[in-house]
Structure formats: structure tokens, C-alpha cells
Amino acid sequence: MALRLLLNCREIPALVSSAPVSFCQRQLLSSARLTHRTNILRYSRQTRNARGESFAPKQTIVPTEIQGIAIDSGYIDPSKLWKSFVFTVAFSAGSFIGVTIWEYETVRSRAMDALRAKLNLNWFRDRMKNNRREVEQWRKEVTGWWDRLSPGERIFAPICALNVLVYGLWRVPQLQPLMVRFFASNPAAKAVCWPMFLSTFSHYSLFHIAANMYVLHSFSHAAVATLGKEQFLGMYLSAGVIASFASHLFKTVVRQPGLSLGASGAIMGVLGYVCCQYPDTQLSIVFLPMFTFSAGAAFKVIMGFDLAGVLLGWRVFDHAAHLGGALFGMFWAYYGSQRMWPLREHFIGFWHEWRGPPKK
Image (tube, rainbow, N blue to C red; front, top):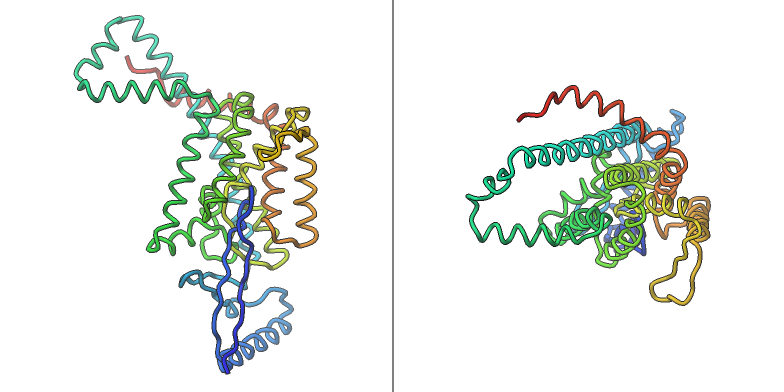
């Protein structure tokens, strides 16, 4: 008689959840196959006990399936944490270096445009004269729409567009093996680094992406107004990768592999920064606008909930990722923006020397 086994039932996506999008897949296993697998596990335990290992050997990887896609599950190599840690540090540093270059090039470009316009009043007119009228009209409409956006909306719009694009890619069945490999973070997978970043733009359910983008839109205005778009983007990207590393660390310690995806880790970084900078700001729930509470109190409740989830082993959300992102947001609010961000001036000087004088 066949025996039904439920393997790897993970959490379902929920409001502002970073990652915990996973899937339940039932597999029908025969008694013979179950006996064979039990023998393998028994042999593995004997081998592990003889060598004094606390983690299962690689031979005991039991792949589960997501709509026919094999997923590495059951073994997390602790040595991969070093690779994840180095990637987290390198990516965070690279993010801030990248936005520093972006800031410098923007200022440089504006200065050169102003200088050229002063030296030759017809410069802009001459440059655009050969363009077709239809293209010029379309460009003016797009530019006008972009100029009407607030600074927070200008940085939110491309982030939201990327998340929507990745959400659409999840809907293509032929791409799902690729999506699971690179757009879902899993410490037990072969590829552990780039999925830590790409998964922060990845959502599998419509409710998941809608909730995350709504929260990001609500808090990005205040954060961008305080930090500027360059510093905000550096903090957002770094918070997402740091949240993924916190998830990897927790799953390795408790030996619970699983897929994680979503923007909540990065959003928790933004939330942590805003709530620490403006703790007295009054917030409300979208469906209950009559009840208001301070941002500081709300953040304490969220942190307490995620801390309890980590300590008690809840699997409603990826609580470790939430905590990692929130702690980085707090760090940036109290220390990073005052002490670390100004250090970019040294790099700007080096970059300016490397770029040389502007071309006339």
C-alpha cells in the first residue's frame, strides 16, 4: 500500500514578509523507496556519529520539488557562511561606492551643462534641432511626468518596476527553474551569493508584492527626504543583502533550509531608519485609519514580534531576515549616516583625480 508523505511544507507569503515564500509539495512514495531512504539515513547517522559531525553529510541531500523543479534541501554547509559573509560585506561596500560615483557624476554633468549653456546660448537648441518632432514630444511628456514626481517617488518607481518585472518572470513556467536558482535565497543551494541580492526583488504572490510595495512607498518619502536618493539607495540595497545573510545564519544554526524571497528585509531597513529618526510620527493602519500610534512604538512591537519568532521558532515570516534588515536600519540612523557616509568624500577626491578634467 502506498504511503503519502508531506515533505518540506514551508511558510506562505504574508504581509511585509521577506522571504518566506515557499511551497508545499506532496510526493507519493512507495514503501520500498521509503525503506531504502530510511536505510540511507540510518547509515548516514552512523557515519556522522562516528566522525563526530553535527550536520548531515552531503550524501543525504533529499531534493524536494516545486512544480517539478528539484530544490536542494536537508543539508546546509556551515562553511558557506564565510562566502555569504564576504559577499555581504563586499556588496554593501560596492553599493555605497556605486551610489557615490552616481552622486559625483550627476553633479559633474549638471555643472558642465550649465557651463556649456552659459558659453553658448544656442547649444541646447542646436543639439535638439535634428531630432524628429514625434520623439521630441514624447520625450517632453516623459520628462514632465518625471519632474512632477517627488524625490521619494523617483527612487521608488524604478525599484517597484524591477519587482513587478521579476514577479512577471515567475509567471513563465519555462523560467521557473532559473527563478528558483537565482531569485530565491537558500543556504542549502549551490548558488548562495547572488540569490541573496536578487531575491530582494523577487515575489511569488500578488498579495506579497502589493503589500511590500505599499509599505515601501509609504516610508520611502521620509527616508529619501532625509538621506537623499543616493544614500537611500545604498542603504536599501545593503539592508536587503544583510537581511539575507541574517536569514542564512539563522537557518544554518537551526538546520532549517528553505527558500526565502521578498523585499521585506530591505524595507525593514527603511522602516528602522525612519522610525528611529522620527519616533513621534503618528502612523495608522490602512484599514483602520481611526487608530493612530507613534512610529517608535510600532517599531518596538515589530521588533519584539520578530525576536519572539526567532527565539520560539515561528515560521510565519522569515523573522531573522526582518531583524537583520531592521537592525541595519537602526545602525544607519544612529551611526552610519553621521559617521560612515561622510567618509565618501575621500573616495570622491580619488575618483575626481582619476576622471581628470572634463572635456570641453
